[in-house]
Amino acid sequence: MDDSASLDTLFREAAGAIDAGDTGALERLLAAHPALVRERLTAPGDWLRDRVNGALEGYFRAPYLLWFVADNPIRIGSLPANIAEVARTIATAAKREEAPELQAQLDYALALVVTGRVPRDCGMQTELMDALIDAGANPGDGYGALSARNLAAAAHLVERGGRLTLAAALCLDRADDAARLAADATAEDRQIAFAAAALNGNAGALATLIGLGADVRAYATAIHPHATPLHHAVDSGSLGAVKVLVEAGAPLDARDRVYDGTPLDWAEHLGRGEIARCLRELAAKSVEDGDG
Image (cartoon, rainbow, N blue to C red; front, side):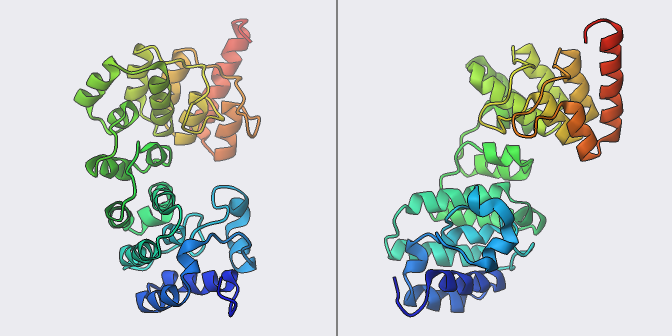
């Protein structure tokens, strides 16, 4: 590590160059301080900690510099117009320096991009995905994009060689592919697809999966496993998806494993007024019928 400046100070300066889209300054920093692409920031200062809250103890723990290109977690809420070039600049330097865990750096940066709101809302998600995939990131299975409701990103991952899953085929309305994949789908494949369809409020896909034997009572696997499909449908805001699940026997009293809330609790917290009213009525009817 360079003795003339702490890694935290260098990361702060490099992050500023990323945010400004200043590839010249970034290239100079990376050439002078190779640690920026080789090491993780294990002791971030308040400049970062104050902006991303608890993410540094969670999914953004000890970040690599490349991960900053996604603005996920959100630090500034925007990306420079040349963010793809910025990502290529960092990836090129990392390859030049034979950075450790380079594949992990690239793969996780891509995961942050496809699940991020800022790249999508800035209209730069696809270009940034391409820059990272071209640099060697693995397009993967697209579950992250589906869980974040970034369907365009999920579709682009498939176009770039990612695995087409039953979940993606259903959520992207690729009926022929879904029928083909359903024939050999495992129980886990169906439950992952069930969670993805619920999160994206896709009532038709939910009905299809119920017909294939998906368990409406089971907690999700691989995609937000802390909650049931009904919780996820509530989160999506789709009353149609909620009704499909309830009519198939989804439990109204199931509690998620993080907040200990029922689907009705979620609806009230998220301001899903119409869904909340529907769930209250169904709960009252269940009591009247002696099911509660």
